[in-house]
Length: 423
Image 1 (cartoon, one colour):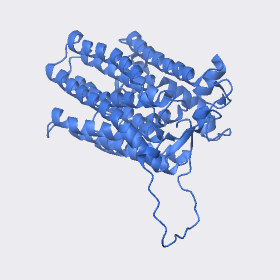
Image 2 (cartoon, rainbow, N blue to C red):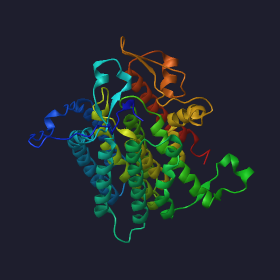
Image 3 (cartoon, rainbow, N blue to C red):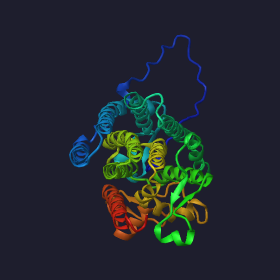
């Protein structure tokens, strides 16, 4: 949920009777639409290079990866880069169309300033979702054969992501109540759960084996229930940890980068072809998510030119949930989601109506100083302001994204320290 106040998409007008000789009024041209601020490519491109150059350096020169696997990852990366360019070109065009259909909002965190009265195009996550799905579908031609064991699960994953993209856009248009939002991802996850043919067993941590009695425990249908709950959590977790320019997309970028690093490390450390393929499968779905999100971030970073809408938050959450489920690293994924877990637990009293929950649980903005002040609402955004003091929206977003990155670093450290002892 972005920091915005939605406009009414339907305005009641009295019926008008035109005179017989009245000349037809000219239609509004595209010149009447407010110009969109250019993308912040000077910030996004260097940051992208700072990540991808070492990533492919490790892929080609450090880890011993099979040439065929390396080739597939490179093809996927090239298509993802093309997706970045397409998104940068498409967002200004799509912004005009959604604005004409009254899909725009006003930035609440800038209320009382000239920027707070600007109409900001809404639901631009639909562009990211469409480009992402096209890349993922076309990539099948280069990597999968008609008898591939992974093809069914791959298409089921795309069906779940597509379903969630649609439901997110419906939410942006119809403004669905919260109690229904919590249920929507469970329906979107059905294609994936029905097509899932992987294992349903878990490895018991070594310290608990004497108490459980077995080293491997088959959970059966309980494991699929867990996968459905993970999809519900991931989609809503991104959606409720929001409210600042760049926060929704920024956290997705950080988590996606951590997932890519984790997959590459697991491929390099394992000699099991099936295990490597599972993590390569994850890379195929995360790379286009990362590059298209970076393109969106160039428009959504402070000051935001577009709002991503629930369309993007649901889509991104489902995409990462699918990656964690089919890549068989759901525990690691939850560690990457540590800030979102904390934010959800902190929000529970308001989400479940134990205490009053306002529509927008946002900090208070002072138009005189341009600083945000934390409220008593249960979100990490407000908690950071109460703990560390008032600051600008941009500074607060950077702090939260640094916290997200540190959580991912903590996850890697825990995996390193507990390796061999925990499992």
